[in-house]
Amino acid sequence: MLRGIVSAFKARGHKKIELAGKVSTSPTGITIERFKEGAKKQTVAWESIESATAFKRDLFAYDLICVAIRIDSGIAVEIDERMEGWQEFCEGLEAYLPNSLVPNEWLDKVMHPALKPSTTIIYSRSTS
Image 1 (cartoon, rainbow, N blue to C red):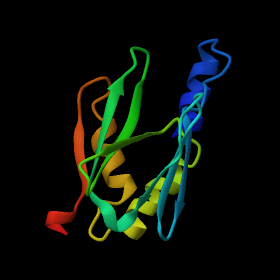
Image 2: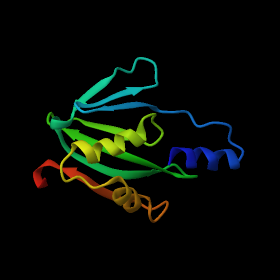
Image 3: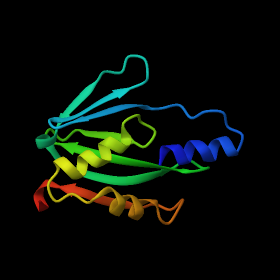
């Protein structure tokens, strides 16, 4: 997905898309690191995730696929496809959150139609 966006931008004459950060996936949870000065790493255990919702942001020239993770404390964490480790994160949702949607299923729902709002619940603890 990210490679496709980068290729599309290069085709339009853009040199480079900056990565927004990094998400690392493990059997215990995810760690989010933002690539901006002063940002702190956030670690989220799989068992603390209440819900995961996929959506897209209209960035004028293209849509940005995002996932909002809501945890026990009520805090929401946003992860997007510009982040290093996105593919592994998507696979981790399926692997570590029981009864969550598979990536191909929710990505297709969120991506289409292009440039139109679209939200899909990937996982909800209350329904799993």
